[in-house]
Amino acid sequence: MATRLPVTVITGFLGAGKTTILRHLLTTSGQRLAVMVNEFGTVGLDGDLIRSCGFCPEEEVDGRLVELNNGCLCCTVQDDFLPTMETLLQRSDQLDGIVVETSGLALPRPLLQALEWPEIRKRVHVNGVVTVVDGEALSAGSPVGDPAALERQRQDDPSLDHLTAIDELFENQLASADLVLISRSDRLQPDQLKTVRQDLASKLRAGTETLAISRGVLDPGLVLGIDATSDGKNVVSDHHEHEHPSHSSHHDHSHHDHGDGHDHHDHTHVEALSGQVRCEGSVSRQQLEQLLPDFVREHGVIRLKGRVWLEGKSLPLQIQMVGPRLDSWFEAAPDLAWQPAGGTGIELVVIGLQADAAARLEDSLQPLMACAPAST
Image (cartoon, rainbow, N blue to C red; front, side, top):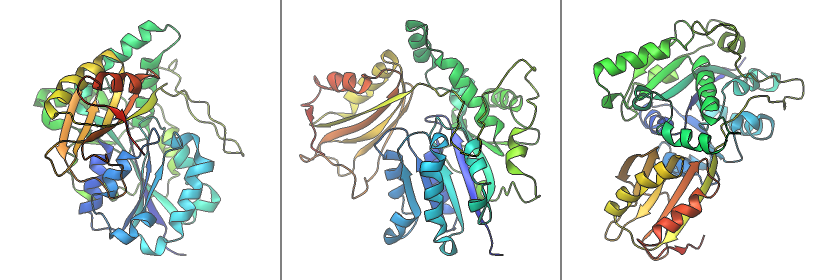
């Protein structure tokens, strides 16, 4: 029998740092890896960041990087995940492994179940599930970068229970983990990191390791060498048929229950919405650093990411926000990415709880720049 290809699933909440870690793995592991990226929204900025990191020869990128933007991957297993896996497996002799980066709203279990289906399991095995958590946010008391924004939105609409849904999603991702990576640990004091580890331990399966990292840097072997199925256990039951040591019997997790049709889902998602802003015109870095954190706080934005082409700069400024925390750096955009015709402009994806958040952001940018709708 041919060697089965290892599949590593990287999961974690919006903005936890999954893509940063994945870029590091791809460029330092020395392995021939294929990547499946599931983004929330139609603009594949995370895919662009991976494409531009140079993890493989340019002529091989289209065959080794697949972007799925049709919704949460755990809800599109049959339509998206399995066909994509079949396509990647057609070149399995040219690969050392496959890495799946889920969206921040996905549950790992349906993917693990899909990898156990007869048409797949003879050709792959689950190396492990890696859950990335935001250490700074957890130290502040929530898996979300800006829990206050979510709480304000929940209070405005009594029918919403988003904070509970986020906690449920977070616990499911932790319960599935073979390894937990605590990102942004460099922003924590030793006692804060110790508290985060203790809080995580109560939600993890016995023996699950936690590793504190910063800026996505770690030994690739720690992630790609987990080999969760090396002992012959059933990976689905081992990950999910267990008791949470910290939860009493009345706490009922929302699990998936797939019948023969593989298309039934009974979990509750965070009701997040995404929108896009593309404008041509000039704006300064300082203006954005003043505007964006305030906008995020006021409009219940969970995640904001994108690029800004600044006057006098040869490279676009990459923008990444989790709640009001803003990270920015200069990095080239992929050749096929959108670019402003006039040389300066902005492209942002807004993920939050208000359907009109992107439109409101565009309105907020109007006083700062000639924010004409961009040509695609």
